[in-house]
Image 1 (cartoon, rainbow, N blue to C red):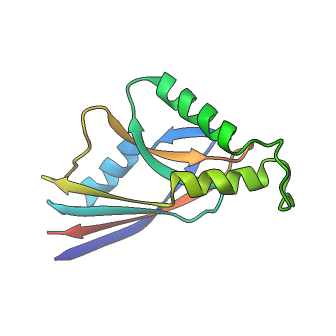
Image 2 (spheres, rainbow, N blue to C red):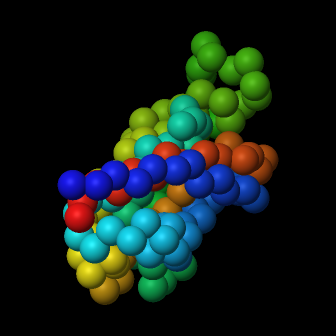
Length: 138
């Protein structure tokens, strides 16, 4: 078994979902591993990772509205040192999660037809986000 690991950096434009599927596919192709497991880890507490439909932008808008209803900025939060989006971003990051595991074969990520991998930015302004990618396989 071989292991490849790196940190991929992404600039976000603020609250929203950034499709990172193609960047992951390029990185995996460079790893030269043919089959195994790709793990992703988001190194932030106000951003997350998710797999969702990548065909309809309406799905992304609905997901973001749903998260806003669960953790509204108008909530009464004790933790607000960085502004009204601070604690809601932490709650949303907990809901979207910080890690994903995705199988790959023939040097390609085995996502479903309509699936994409997204970096979820939960803060109002853009940030530079880091994702640790690790491929284990042969």
